[in-house]
Amino acid sequence: MKHVDIKKMLSDADMVGTDVVVCGWVRTFRDSAQVAFLELSDGSSFQKLQVVIDKNALTVDGEATKLGASVAVKGTVVKAYRGEGNELNAKEVLLLGSCPADYPIQKKRTTLDFLRTIPHLRLRTNTFQAVFRVRSVAAQAIHRYFHENGYYYINAPLITASDCEGAGEMFRVTTLPWNADFKSAEEYFKNDFFGVKAGLSVSGQLEGEVAATALGKIYTFGPSFRAENSNTKRHLAEFWHVEPEVAFAELPDVIEIAEDMLKYLVNAVLTECPEEMKFFDSFMEKGLLEKLSHVANAEFAVCTYTEAISILEKENARFEFPVHWGSDLQSEHEKFLTEQVFKRPVFVTNYPKEIKSFYMKQNADGKTVAATDLLVPGIGEIIGGSEREADLTKLQAAMRARGMDESAYKQYLDLRRFGTVPHGGFGLGFERFVMYCTGIENIRDVTLFPRSVKNIM
Ligand code: 4AD
Ligand code: MG
Image (cartoon, rainbow, N blue to C red; front, side):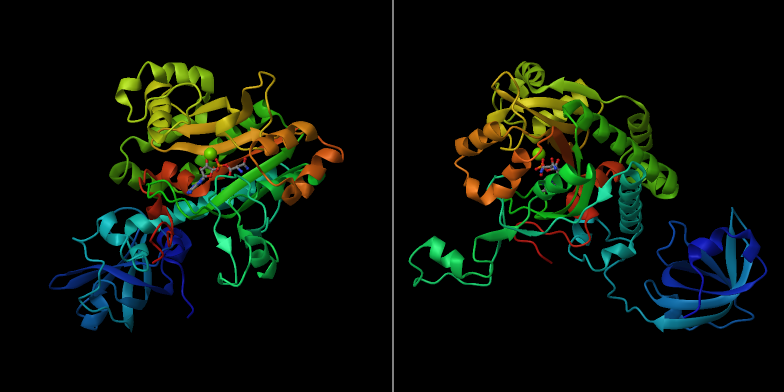
Protein backbone atom coordinates (compact mmCIF):
# COMPACT_ATOMS: atom_id res chain seq x y z
CA MET A 1 0.00 0.00 0.00
CA LYS A 2 1.62 3.27 -1.06
CA HIS A 3 1.69 5.53 1.98
CA VAL A 4 3.98 7.82 3.99
CA ASP A 5 5.29 7.32 7.53
CA ILE A 6 3.58 9.48 10.11
CA LYS A 7 6.98 10.56 11.42
CA LYS A 8 7.87 12.07 8.06
CA MET A 9 4.44 13.57 7.46
CA LEU A 10 4.42 15.28 10.84
CA SER A 11 7.62 17.19 10.32
CA ASP A 12 8.17 17.67 6.59
CA ALA A 13 7.25 21.29 5.70
CA ASP A 14 7.54 20.46 1.98
CA MET A 15 4.57 18.13 2.25
CA VAL A 16 2.16 20.92 3.22
CA GLY A 17 -0.48 21.30 0.52
CA THR A 18 0.08 17.84 -0.98
CA ASP A 19 -2.24 14.84 -0.83
CA VAL A 20 -0.89 11.73 0.91
CA VAL A 21 -2.04 8.41 2.34
CA VAL A 22 -1.11 7.47 5.91
CA CYS A 23 -1.84 4.19 7.68
CA GLY A 24 -2.04 3.43 11.38
CA TRP A 25 -4.03 2.38 14.43
CA VAL A 26 -6.62 4.57 16.11
CA ARG A 27 -5.49 5.91 19.48
CA THR A 28 -8.29 8.37 20.26
CA PHE A 29 -11.39 9.76 18.63
CA ARG A 30 -12.99 13.07 19.58
CA ASP A 31 -16.27 14.09 18.09
CA SER A 32 -18.09 17.45 17.95
CA ALA A 33 -20.90 18.94 15.87
CA GLN A 34 -18.87 20.10 12.88
CA VAL A 35 -15.53 18.32 13.10
CA ALA A 36 -14.09 15.12 14.49
CA PHE A 37 -10.47 14.28 15.34
CA LEU A 38 -8.87 10.92 14.85
CA GLU A 39 -5.48 10.36 16.45
CA LEU A 40 -3.33 7.77 14.68
CA SER A 41 -0.09 5.98 15.49
CA ASP A 42 1.89 3.89 13.02
CA GLY A 43 4.81 3.27 15.39
CA SER A 44 7.23 5.51 13.49
CA SER A 45 7.27 8.32 16.03
CA PHE A 46 6.36 9.17 19.57
CA GLN A 47 4.05 11.95 18.43
CA LYS A 48 0.70 10.85 17.00
CA LEU A 49 -0.92 12.22 13.88
CA GLN A 50 -4.05 14.29 14.19
CA VAL A 51 -6.50 13.61 11.37
CA VAL A 52 -9.16 16.31 11.02
CA ILE A 53 -12.54 15.20 9.67
CA ASP A 54 -14.91 17.86 8.36
CA LYS A 55 -18.22 16.19 9.09
CA ASN A 56 -20.09 18.29 6.53
CA ALA A 57 -17.89 16.97 3.77
CA LEU A 58 -17.14 13.40 4.88
CA THR A 59 -19.00 10.59 6.60
CA VAL A 60 -16.75 8.08 8.37
CA ASP A 61 -17.57 4.44 9.14
CA GLY A 62 -18.03 4.22 12.93
CA GLU A 63 -15.83 1.12 13.05
CA ALA A 64 -12.91 3.19 11.75
CA THR A 65 -13.04 5.46 14.80
CA LYS A 66 -12.79 2.78 17.48
CA LEU A 67 -9.72 2.41 19.67
CA GLY A 68 -7.27 -0.05 18.09
CA ALA A 69 -8.89 -0.17 14.64
CA SER A 70 -6.49 -0.03 11.70
CA VAL A 71 -7.16 2.52 8.98
CA ALA A 72 -5.74 4.15 5.88
CA VAL A 73 -6.46 7.85 5.51
CA LYS A 74 -6.16 9.86 2.35
CA GLY A 75 -5.99 13.60 2.86
CA THR A 76 -4.26 16.93 2.45
CA VAL A 77 -1.28 17.83 4.64
CA VAL A 78 -1.77 21.15 6.44
CA LYS A 79 0.17 23.03 9.10
CA ALA A 80 -1.14 22.08 12.52
CA TYR A 81 -3.86 24.41 13.80
CA ARG A 82 -2.23 24.25 17.23
CA GLY A 83 1.39 23.50 18.06
CA GLU A 84 4.21 22.53 15.71
CA GLY A 85 4.32 20.33 12.64
CA ASN A 86 1.61 19.10 10.34
CA GLU A 87 -1.77 17.45 10.51
CA LEU A 88 -4.01 15.84 7.93
CA ASN A 89 -7.37 17.04 6.55
CA ALA A 90 -9.12 13.79 5.69
CA LYS A 91 -10.70 13.18 2.29
CA GLU A 92 -11.27 9.48 2.72
CA VAL A 93 -11.00 7.13 5.72
CA LEU A 94 -10.71 3.46 4.83
CA LEU A 95 -11.21 0.80 7.52
CA LEU A 96 -8.52 -1.88 7.23
CA GLY A 97 -9.34 -3.92 10.33
CA SER A 98 -12.00 -3.33 12.94
CA CYS A 99 -11.19 -3.70 16.64
CA PRO A 100 -13.95 -5.00 18.92
CA ALA A 101 -14.56 -3.69 22.43
CA ASP A 102 -12.76 -6.60 24.11
CA TYR A 103 -9.42 -5.20 22.82
CA PRO A 104 -7.23 -5.63 25.93
CA ILE A 105 -5.32 -2.36 25.54
CA GLN A 106 -7.82 -0.04 27.17
CA LYS A 107 -6.80 3.30 28.64
CA LYS A 108 -7.55 2.27 32.23
CA ARG A 109 -5.78 -1.11 32.21
CA THR A 110 -2.26 -0.43 31.24
CA THR A 111 -0.15 -1.35 34.26
CA LEU A 112 3.13 -3.00 33.30
CA ASP A 113 2.12 -6.10 35.30
CA PHE A 114 -1.04 -6.50 33.26
CA LEU A 115 0.67 -5.75 29.95
CA ARG A 116 3.22 -8.49 30.67
CA THR A 117 0.36 -10.99 30.28
CA ILE A 118 -0.25 -9.83 26.68
CA PRO A 119 3.23 -9.56 25.19
CA HIS A 120 1.81 -9.74 21.65
CA LEU A 121 -0.27 -6.58 22.11
CA ARG A 122 1.63 -4.47 24.63
CA LEU A 123 3.75 -2.90 21.89
CA ARG A 124 0.66 -0.95 20.87
CA THR A 125 1.14 1.28 23.94
CA ASN A 126 3.22 4.46 24.16
CA THR A 127 5.54 2.98 26.78
CA PHE A 128 6.46 -0.15 24.86
CA GLN A 129 6.78 1.63 21.52
CA ALA A 130 9.18 4.05 23.18
CA VAL A 131 11.17 1.22 24.80
CA PHE A 132 11.57 -0.62 21.53
CA ARG A 133 12.53 2.47 19.56
CA VAL A 134 15.22 3.18 22.18
CA ARG A 135 16.33 -0.45 22.06
CA SER A 136 16.71 -0.30 18.28
CA VAL A 137 18.64 2.98 18.38
CA ALA A 138 20.94 1.55 21.07
CA ALA A 139 21.61 -1.60 19.01
CA GLN A 140 22.52 0.47 15.95
CA ALA A 141 24.78 2.65 18.12
CA ILE A 142 26.63 -0.43 19.39
CA HIS A 143 27.49 -1.50 15.86
CA ARG A 144 28.41 2.08 14.94
CA TYR A 145 30.67 2.51 17.97
CA PHE A 146 32.69 -0.61 17.30
CA HIS A 147 32.78 -0.12 13.54
CA GLU A 148 34.01 3.46 13.93
CA ASN A 149 36.71 2.30 16.34
CA GLY A 150 38.15 -0.42 14.11
CA TYR A 151 36.55 -3.52 15.63
CA TYR A 152 35.38 -6.44 13.50
CA TYR A 153 31.93 -7.91 14.09
CA ILE A 154 32.08 -11.66 14.82
CA ASN A 155 29.22 -14.13 15.08
CA ALA A 156 30.06 -16.67 17.75
CA PRO A 157 28.24 -20.04 17.68
CA LEU A 158 25.18 -20.39 19.89
CA ILE A 159 25.55 -24.15 20.26
CA THR A 160 28.73 -25.09 22.06
CA ALA A 161 30.50 -27.90 23.89
CA SER A 162 32.43 -25.61 26.23
CA ASP A 163 31.07 -23.75 29.22
CA CYS A 164 32.53 -20.25 29.39
CA GLU A 165 31.41 -19.09 32.80
CA GLY A 166 31.39 -22.50 34.47
CA ALA A 167 28.54 -21.72 36.84
CA GLY A 168 26.45 -24.71 35.79
CA GLU A 169 23.92 -22.58 34.00
CA MET A 170 24.01 -24.16 30.54
CA PHE A 171 20.85 -25.30 28.76
CA ARG A 172 21.43 -28.70 27.19
CA VAL A 173 20.97 -29.19 23.45
CA THR A 174 19.96 -32.74 22.64
CA THR A 175 17.88 -34.83 20.24
CA LEU A 176 18.14 -37.93 22.37
CA PRO A 177 15.91 -38.69 25.36
CA TRP A 178 17.68 -40.44 28.22
CA ASN A 179 17.04 -44.13 28.20
CA ALA A 180 18.03 -46.68 30.80
CA ASP A 181 19.78 -48.83 28.17
CA PHE A 182 22.74 -46.43 28.14
CA LYS A 183 25.34 -47.84 30.53
CA SER A 184 26.94 -44.49 31.29
CA ALA A 185 26.55 -40.76 30.70
CA GLU A 186 29.50 -40.99 28.32
CA GLU A 187 27.77 -43.60 26.19
CA TYR A 188 24.60 -41.54 26.18
CA PHE A 189 26.37 -38.38 24.98
CA LYS A 190 28.29 -40.37 22.37
CA ASN A 191 24.97 -41.37 20.82
CA ASP A 192 23.54 -37.86 20.96
CA PHE A 193 23.45 -35.49 17.99
CA PHE A 194 26.93 -33.98 18.42
CA GLY A 195 28.52 -37.06 19.99
CA VAL A 196 29.37 -35.02 23.09
CA LYS A 197 27.45 -33.06 25.69
CA ALA A 198 26.37 -29.83 24.03
CA GLY A 199 24.52 -26.76 25.19
CA LEU A 200 23.45 -23.20 24.42
CA SER A 201 26.29 -20.76 24.90
CA VAL A 202 26.32 -18.54 28.00
CA SER A 203 28.83 -16.21 26.33
CA GLY A 204 30.64 -15.74 23.02
CA GLN A 205 33.85 -14.83 24.80
CA LEU A 206 35.89 -18.00 24.22
CA GLU A 207 35.30 -17.77 20.47
CA GLY A 208 35.77 -14.00 20.71
CA GLU A 209 39.27 -14.62 22.05
CA VAL A 210 40.00 -16.86 19.05
CA ALA A 211 39.04 -13.99 16.76
CA ALA A 212 40.77 -11.25 18.77
CA THR A 213 44.07 -13.13 18.81
CA ALA A 214 44.01 -12.96 15.01
CA LEU A 215 42.03 -9.87 14.05
CA GLY A 216 43.06 -7.70 16.99
CA LYS A 217 39.81 -6.02 17.96
CA ILE A 218 36.47 -7.78 17.65
CA TYR A 219 33.02 -7.74 19.17
CA THR A 220 30.07 -10.08 19.23
CA PHE A 221 26.48 -8.99 19.66
CA GLY A 222 24.01 -11.82 19.97
CA PRO A 223 21.96 -13.90 22.36
CA SER A 224 23.38 -15.70 25.39
CA PHE A 225 21.47 -18.30 27.38
CA ARG A 226 21.51 -18.94 31.10
CA ALA A 227 19.50 -21.57 32.92
CA GLU A 228 19.54 -19.40 36.03
CA ASN A 229 16.95 -20.52 38.46
CA SER A 230 16.46 -17.00 39.74
CA ASN A 231 13.33 -15.02 39.14
CA THR A 232 14.70 -11.51 39.52
CA LYS A 233 13.97 -8.23 37.77
CA ARG A 234 17.37 -8.28 36.07
CA HIS A 235 17.83 -11.88 34.90
CA LEU A 236 16.56 -13.57 31.75
CA ALA A 237 17.15 -17.09 30.47
CA GLU A 238 17.82 -15.55 27.03
CA PHE A 239 19.44 -12.14 26.83
CA TRP A 240 21.44 -10.16 24.29
CA HIS A 241 25.10 -9.83 24.98
CA VAL A 242 27.64 -7.35 23.64
CA GLU A 243 31.16 -8.74 24.00
CA PRO A 244 34.21 -6.89 22.71
CA GLU A 245 37.56 -8.68 22.95
CA VAL A 246 40.86 -6.90 22.35
CA ALA A 247 44.38 -8.18 21.82
CA PHE A 248 47.21 -6.38 23.65
CA ALA A 249 44.70 -4.93 26.14
CA GLU A 250 45.24 -5.06 29.90
CA LEU A 251 42.73 -4.38 32.66
CA PRO A 252 43.03 -0.54 32.55
CA ASP A 253 42.44 -0.66 28.78
CA VAL A 254 39.35 -2.82 29.28
CA ILE A 255 38.00 -0.26 31.76
CA GLU A 256 38.73 2.62 29.40
CA ILE A 257 36.94 0.95 26.50
CA ALA A 258 33.90 0.06 28.61
CA GLU A 259 33.52 3.63 29.87
CA ASP A 260 34.00 5.15 26.43
CA MET A 261 31.49 2.75 24.85
CA LEU A 262 28.85 3.29 27.52
CA LYS A 263 29.11 7.08 27.18
CA TYR A 264 28.83 6.83 23.41
CA LEU A 265 25.70 4.68 23.71
CA VAL A 266 24.06 6.98 26.26
CA ASN A 267 24.76 9.99 24.04
CA ALA A 268 23.30 8.22 21.01
CA VAL A 269 20.07 7.44 22.85
CA LEU A 270 19.80 11.00 24.22
CA THR A 271 20.33 12.58 20.79
CA GLU A 272 18.32 10.19 18.69
CA CYS A 273 15.33 9.60 20.98
CA PRO A 274 14.58 13.00 22.56
CA GLU A 275 10.81 12.53 22.78
CA GLU A 276 11.02 9.00 24.14
CA MET A 277 13.56 10.08 26.74
CA LYS A 278 11.44 13.03 27.82
CA PHE A 279 8.54 10.62 28.27
CA PHE A 280 10.62 8.22 30.39
CA ASP A 281 11.91 11.13 32.44
CA SER A 282 8.33 12.18 33.23
CA PHE A 283 6.69 8.78 33.70
CA MET A 284 9.33 6.16 34.57
CA GLU A 285 12.20 7.75 36.46
CA LYS A 286 12.18 11.37 37.58
CA GLY A 287 15.59 12.89 36.90
CA LEU A 288 16.49 10.28 34.26
CA LEU A 289 17.68 12.86 31.74
CA GLU A 290 19.85 14.57 34.30
CA LYS A 291 21.28 11.22 35.42
CA LEU A 292 22.14 10.22 31.88
CA SER A 293 23.70 13.50 30.84
CA HIS A 294 25.80 13.31 34.00
CA VAL A 295 26.85 9.78 32.99
CA ALA A 296 27.75 10.97 29.52
CA ASN A 297 30.07 13.64 30.92
CA ALA A 298 31.39 12.65 34.36
CA GLU A 299 34.27 10.28 34.95
CA PHE A 300 33.28 6.88 36.32
CA ALA A 301 34.70 5.81 39.68
CA VAL A 302 37.12 2.90 40.10
CA CYS A 303 37.64 0.97 43.34
CA THR A 304 39.15 -2.39 44.18
CA TYR A 305 37.07 -5.24 45.54
CA THR A 306 39.11 -5.06 48.76
CA GLU A 307 38.27 -1.34 49.17
CA ALA A 308 34.62 -2.08 48.37
CA ILE A 309 34.48 -4.77 51.06
CA SER A 310 35.94 -2.50 53.72
CA ILE A 311 33.30 0.14 52.86
CA LEU A 312 30.51 -2.45 52.90
CA GLU A 313 31.60 -4.21 56.09
CA LYS A 314 30.91 -1.02 58.04
CA GLU A 315 27.31 -1.17 56.76
CA ASN A 316 26.75 -4.90 57.29
CA ALA A 317 23.81 -4.23 59.62
CA ARG A 318 21.70 -2.93 56.73
CA PHE A 319 22.28 -5.93 54.44
CA GLU A 320 20.34 -9.15 54.12
CA PHE A 321 23.66 -10.84 53.30
CA PRO A 322 26.51 -9.37 55.40
CA VAL A 323 29.84 -9.35 53.54
CA HIS A 324 33.44 -10.19 54.38
CA TRP A 325 36.53 -10.48 52.20
CA GLY A 326 35.84 -13.41 49.86
CA SER A 327 32.07 -13.05 49.57
CA ASP A 328 30.44 -12.48 46.24
CA LEU A 329 28.73 -9.10 45.92
CA GLN A 330 24.94 -9.36 45.87
CA SER A 331 22.66 -6.92 44.15
CA GLU A 332 22.06 -5.07 47.46
CA HIS A 333 25.80 -4.45 47.88
CA GLU A 334 26.30 -3.41 44.28
CA LYS A 335 23.44 -0.93 44.51
CA PHE A 336 24.67 0.48 47.80
CA LEU A 337 28.13 1.11 46.36
CA THR A 338 26.97 2.83 43.18
CA GLU A 339 23.91 4.61 44.60
CA GLN A 340 24.98 5.63 48.11
CA VAL A 341 28.77 5.64 48.16
CA PHE A 342 29.97 6.70 44.71
CA LYS A 343 26.67 8.12 43.37
CA ARG A 344 27.74 7.32 39.80
CA PRO A 345 28.89 4.32 37.76
CA VAL A 346 31.77 2.53 39.45
CA PHE A 347 34.19 -0.14 38.23
CA VAL A 348 35.00 -2.63 40.97
CA THR A 349 38.29 -4.40 40.20
CA ASN A 350 40.49 -7.29 41.32
CA TYR A 351 38.03 -9.76 42.82
CA PRO A 352 39.06 -12.88 44.76
CA LYS A 353 39.88 -15.60 42.24
CA GLU A 354 37.52 -18.11 43.91
CA ILE A 355 34.39 -16.12 43.04
CA LYS A 356 35.35 -15.40 39.42
CA SER A 357 35.80 -17.42 36.23
CA PHE A 358 38.73 -19.67 35.36
CA TYR A 359 39.96 -17.57 32.43
CA MET A 360 40.73 -14.36 34.35
CA LYS A 361 44.30 -13.15 34.68
CA GLN A 362 45.77 -14.08 38.03
CA ASN A 363 47.29 -11.15 39.88
CA ALA A 364 50.74 -11.25 41.51
CA ASP A 365 49.17 -11.33 45.01
CA GLY A 366 48.09 -14.93 44.36
CA LYS A 367 44.63 -14.12 45.71
CA THR A 368 42.87 -11.91 43.18
CA VAL A 369 42.21 -11.78 39.44
CA ALA A 370 42.25 -8.81 37.04
CA ALA A 371 38.47 -8.69 36.71
CA THR A 372 36.10 -5.76 36.69
CA ASP A 373 32.37 -5.30 37.07
CA LEU A 374 30.76 -1.99 36.19
CA LEU A 375 27.99 -1.13 38.64
CA VAL A 376 25.39 1.52 37.86
CA PRO A 377 22.62 3.05 39.98
CA GLY A 378 19.26 1.33 39.71
CA ILE A 379 20.67 -1.83 38.12
CA GLY A 380 23.86 -2.96 39.84
CA GLU A 381 26.13 -4.95 37.52
CA ILE A 382 25.70 -3.91 33.90
CA ILE A 383 29.12 -5.04 32.59
CA GLY A 384 31.41 -7.89 33.61
CA GLY A 385 34.88 -8.22 32.14
CA SER A 386 38.54 -8.92 32.72
CA GLU A 387 42.00 -9.25 31.40
CA ARG A 388 42.43 -12.91 30.39
CA GLU A 389 45.05 -15.32 31.69
CA ALA A 390 47.60 -15.44 28.86
CA ASP A 391 50.02 -17.82 30.60
CA LEU A 392 49.42 -21.46 29.65
CA THR A 393 50.67 -22.99 32.89
CA LYS A 394 48.69 -20.64 35.10
CA LEU A 395 45.55 -21.16 33.05
CA GLN A 396 45.89 -24.94 33.28
CA ALA A 397 46.37 -24.67 37.04
CA ALA A 398 43.19 -22.56 37.37
CA MET A 399 41.24 -25.14 35.35
CA ARG A 400 42.58 -28.01 37.43
CA ALA A 401 41.65 -26.19 40.65
CA ARG A 402 38.07 -26.03 39.35
CA GLY A 403 38.01 -29.67 38.29
CA MET A 404 37.54 -28.72 34.63
CA ASP A 405 38.18 -31.16 31.79
CA GLU A 406 41.18 -29.71 29.95
CA SER A 407 40.58 -31.83 26.87
CA ALA A 408 37.37 -29.89 26.17
CA TYR A 409 39.35 -26.63 26.04
CA LYS A 410 42.27 -27.69 23.83
CA GLN A 411 41.63 -24.94 21.28
CA TYR A 412 41.37 -22.32 24.00
CA LEU A 413 44.65 -23.47 25.49
CA ASP A 414 46.28 -23.43 22.05
CA LEU A 415 45.80 -19.64 22.00
CA ARG A 416 48.29 -19.57 24.91
CA ARG A 417 50.64 -22.03 23.17
CA PHE A 418 50.98 -20.23 19.87
CA GLY A 419 51.95 -16.58 20.17
CA THR A 420 50.09 -15.77 23.37
CA VAL A 421 49.40 -12.07 24.08
CA PRO A 422 47.88 -10.08 26.89
CA HIS A 423 44.24 -9.52 25.99
CA GLY A 424 40.91 -8.75 27.57
CA GLY A 425 37.31 -7.78 27.07
CA PHE A 426 33.94 -7.49 28.69
CA GLY A 427 30.27 -8.35 28.33
CA LEU A 428 27.47 -5.78 28.44
CA GLY A 429 23.98 -7.09 29.12
CA PHE A 430 22.02 -5.31 26.41
CA GLU A 431 18.65 -5.48 28.20
CA ARG A 432 20.24 -4.09 31.35
CA PHE A 433 21.53 -1.19 29.30
CA VAL A 434 18.05 -0.53 27.89
CA MET A 435 16.65 -0.62 31.45
CA TYR A 436 19.29 1.85 32.53
CA CYS A 437 18.41 4.28 29.72
CA THR A 438 14.64 4.07 30.05
CA GLY A 439 14.21 3.79 33.81
CA ILE A 440 12.22 0.58 33.27
CA GLU A 441 12.70 -1.52 36.40
CA ASN A 442 11.86 -5.00 35.16
CA ILE A 443 14.01 -6.64 32.47
CA ARG A 444 10.89 -8.38 31.15
CA ASP A 445 9.59 -5.01 30.03
CA VAL A 446 12.47 -4.25 27.68
CA THR A 447 12.29 -7.65 25.95
CA LEU A 448 9.79 -8.56 23.24
CA PHE A 449 9.14 -12.08 24.52
CA PRO A 450 11.03 -12.51 27.79
CA ARG A 451 12.15 -16.02 28.72
CA SER A 452 12.68 -16.87 32.37
CA VAL A 453 11.96 -19.71 34.79
CA LYS A 454 8.47 -21.09 34.07
CA ASN A 455 7.81 -18.34 31.57
CA ILE A 456 7.87 -18.79 27.77
CA MET A 457 4.71 -17.00 26.61
O1 4AD B 1 29.31 -11.13 34.00
P1 4AD B 1 28.99 -12.10 32.90
O2 4AD B 1 28.52 -13.44 33.28
O3 4AD B 1 30.32 -12.17 32.03
C1 4AD B 1 30.50 -12.97 30.95
O4 4AD B 1 29.68 -13.69 30.44
C2 4AD B 1 31.84 -12.74 30.31
N1 4AD B 1 32.11 -13.90 29.44
C3 4AD B 1 31.83 -11.44 29.55
C4 4AD B 1 33.12 -11.14 28.87
O5 4AD B 1 34.09 -10.85 29.55
N2 4AD B 1 33.17 -11.23 27.56
O6 4AD B 1 27.91 -11.44 31.94
C5 4AD B 1 28.15 -10.18 31.35
C6 4AD B 1 26.94 -9.29 31.48
C7 4AD B 1 26.52 -9.00 32.91
O7 4AD B 1 27.25 -7.93 33.45
C8 4AD B 1 25.05 -8.65 32.74
O8 4AD B 1 24.88 -7.30 32.33
C9 4AD B 1 24.63 -9.56 31.60
O9 4AD B 1 25.80 -9.92 30.90
N3 4AD B 1 23.95 -10.75 32.08
C10 4AD B 1 22.62 -10.94 32.04
N4 4AD B 1 21.64 -10.16 31.58
C11 4AD B 1 20.37 -10.64 31.68
N5 4AD B 1 20.05 -11.85 32.18
C12 4AD B 1 21.03 -12.68 32.65
N6 4AD B 1 20.71 -13.88 33.13
C13 4AD B 1 22.38 -12.22 32.58
N7 4AD B 1 23.56 -12.76 32.94
C14 4AD B 1 24.49 -11.85 32.62
MG1 MG C 1 29.18 -11.01 36.01
